[in-house]
Amino acid sequence: MTADDSFGRLDDDGYPACTMGRAAEMLGTTQGFLRAIGEARLITPLRSAGGHRRYSRYQLRIAARARELVDQGTPIGAACRIVILEDQLEEAQRLNAEYRAAAGSANPSAAA
Image 1 (tube, rainbow, N blue to C red):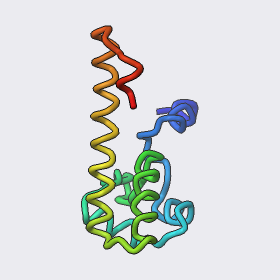
Image 2: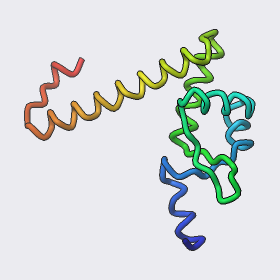
Image 3: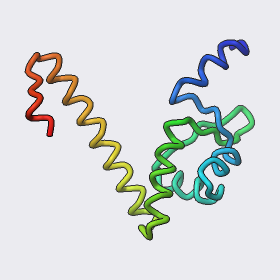
Image 4: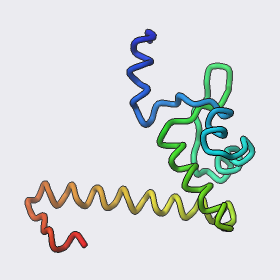
């Protein structure tokens, strides 16, 4: 992969561009928090050739939501489960909308 290819991937939500230290800094949290949500299997960071954790923008959004819930007093395990369920619901709603559009039966009044 050339440098030009790498820069193009920075727009990819799934590209693991952030180190653990940078991710913790961006989220205003600790590296321990990122390890904890990894252990709870909320996110699984990819590893660099040297074994260092790398996070994608998508994973950072998920981690930020978990941090928000923990900051509100939710235990970390429960926060991780809530975020997983929210993510699954969002994906199901997206797929449902795609299926409706493909079937030609999208009904604006049923979107509420």
